Length: 72
Image 1 (cartoon, rainbow, N blue to C red):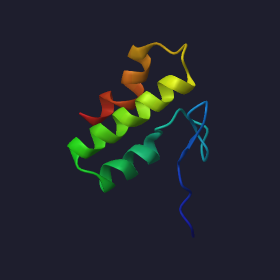
Image 2 (cartoon, rainbow, N blue to C red):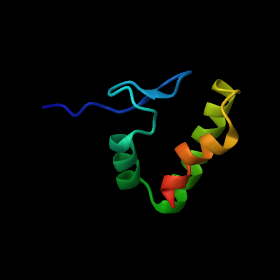
Image 3 (cartoon, rainbow, N blue to C red):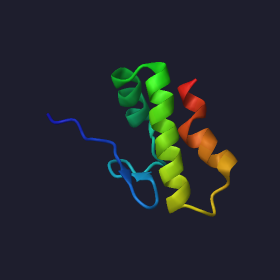
């Protein structure tokens, strides 16, 4: 059985597979397995910046919680 990839759909940044806000739990688990803590934080910061451009009315604090808080 093929594992479904949990990737972001832009510009909403909802998961293409499950519809939850990305990074969803399966995406977080995969990203954590694939990257060390520092590389993961840098990668997620890059995603946060892209999401901020796609969702300019979303408060920065919400984006921080969604993209970075869980990496600590």
